[in-house]
Image (cartoon, rainbow, N blue to C red; front, side, top):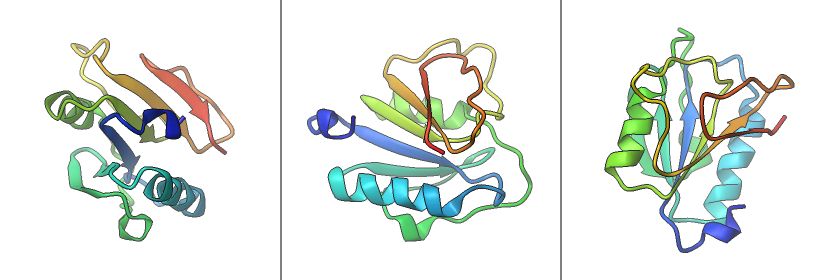
Length: 127
């Protein structure tokens, strides 16, 4: 999937709202993007965007409050004209009701055994 998007503007968002996640799995996913598509933008966010940098697995900082909102990242991707957004999350965060779809490819990468229903885009279990 990543290799098929070599000529596209790709971003990888990581939900950093909880440290109760498989950080090893998430780091491996980020390392994969770092290796296969080095120009991937890494967005770290919980209830707000914390950082936007080139993809580097060793730069992820997790928080323990458990609050997440996807709205800022989804709007950021639109404003930055991202072609494909991959979002690593458990899909328990908030999205403004006005956002019912996005105009780019969106893949929710769920690092959990349970694969929830997503509001739009495509969910992929990566656990």
